[in-house]
Image (spheres, rainbow, N blue to C red):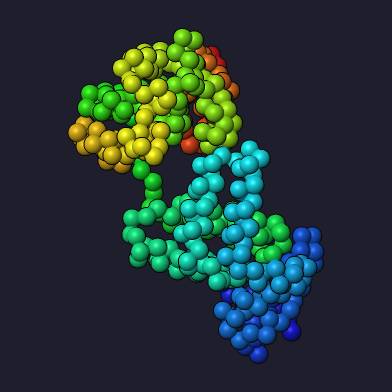
Length: 356
């Protein structure tokens, strides 16, 4: 056969033999390996795609039986692994809870599918299934967990190629910094819990979940420091932070007025010590202040991070100190949390002038 007899398809490695009508694999399946040409013994593109997967499993030495493990079996092993990692202190309880919640949602739809059968079309079917059940439900956590599971299957050589899925949720709420006018508006109409959250979040950049989970025993009002315990931190690392001047005053006022000796943000439910969410009071404050309803408490962290960036520019601190305080690496900070304005670009543009 000559190259002219092979016609291109949507898959660059699958070619159609125009003479026989049979699809062929033509590609380099192994790194630094030579190109191979192999009949897929399929007369339709769909069958050719499936045959290609089987061929790659054979060529790369992956046990086809491993790919026949069901999602249910894989999910259970994945859950057990993370429960063990939680006991070892490698991950936080919140991470494990998110994984369990995602696997519980994915299970009814994917349980009986083999891990090697999970692909883009099946994922889209899952999205449609969830949208039909609960139109407003966010699927980001499901997507992230499924991607983690597929990475594990690929590394274990249980599937021939790594498949990843994009978050199908519409663009998130505006992850932008709040203006001073918006901060003042929230402080004027918010409940006591919202006002304290705004004060701490805006001046210290802590994650909302970290703020709500604080116990008084972790807050040193005399020295002006608080500790975020590892189990209350997204990255499972403890860190001690100096409390901002405004937040320290607000916390002292809360401590003096509060009858709860355990939680800084006590829950009104007997079954739990802390508030686990502040969505209701936050939404009320946003509505009363007539602000954008796309704003969420996490916007406070973005606001603080951006303002801290401007202090870096003024020489008041360094990017390393800011990133350590915020508990983020420099790349993540620059990519997601540093919201520069046109005025910020004017400063940069004014740094260099033509030589005289």
